[in-house]
Length: 213
Ligand SMILES: [Zn+2]
Figure 1 (tube, rainbow, N blue to C red):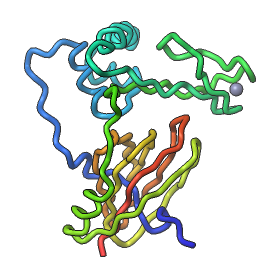
Figure 2: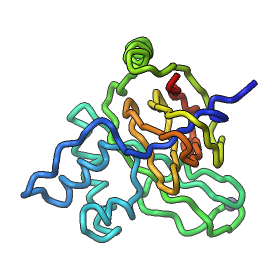
Figure 3: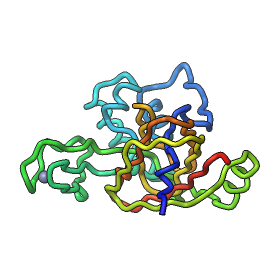
Figure 4: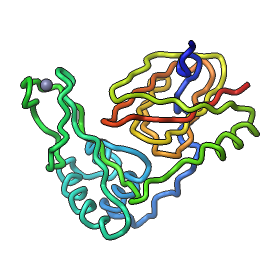
């Protein structure tokens, strides 16, 4: 059997096909952080660069955002840090900052926690609607499922590919560019682009993939 990945290239290359509104001129750092959190999972370091404040300030803003969105039908979602030496996952951690060491193996190679804004009723992807739309554009549509930690590295194929995450947290690397698409966000992986797909979350990931016929 050929895995979808084998000839499907999940690369998000051209970036998000779904456009995002330009930032308002008078946006505060906290507003900027909220806006970027809505576009997919981000680390505190990435948010620091995007909002032009220190990583420590980002954590303070995140704590405030986590409280303030509770009444607004949303939730600050967190993909916890993971030890890259032994696989320990910091599931029960309540502080939002990055842990410094692994309690199980004492290792120091930890992934950064990822943050995102989740609507209380999680966004859902209508598979039939996507399939119809992709068919009209000449693409197939299949559903792929991966367990946490699954990685598909360095695939290439001869046709363009589309990817839409249905649930979970995946990372796509396309020709060296890394993205973590939001649920429902369409990613284009161009033909012949070298690409990898990784389930970096703690839950099963599912996504739709289509190849140009
Ligand atoms: Zn460890």
